[in-house]
Amino acid sequence: MRKTYQHPNRYRFIHPPQALRKAKQDTIVIIPASMLPLTKTIQQVLSNLPKGSVFLCHAKENTKQRRVLERVEAAFRQYGHAVTILPMEQVI
Image (cartoon, rainbow, N blue to C red; front, side):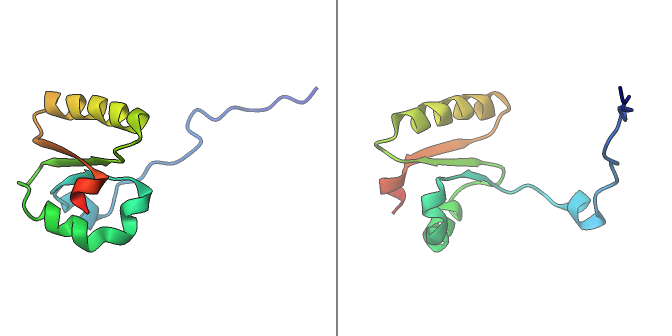
């Protein structure tokens, strides 16, 4: 029988690049993939939000997606973020 050696750290972790370490987090955006072509419309909505806020968007008819985003909203609010949650139809 062949014995395999398990590496404790299979991947090497390195320091991230300088630009990535200095990057500031402006706004967190979670949207459905179907809204990706509408980035200009989303940018207009995001420009009105304060720095460090969270924007969540869901399809109105998808209740499962909305429930998941409500949990995500509660988690971000616990960490002190300002959260905006809107249905996709209201953004368009």
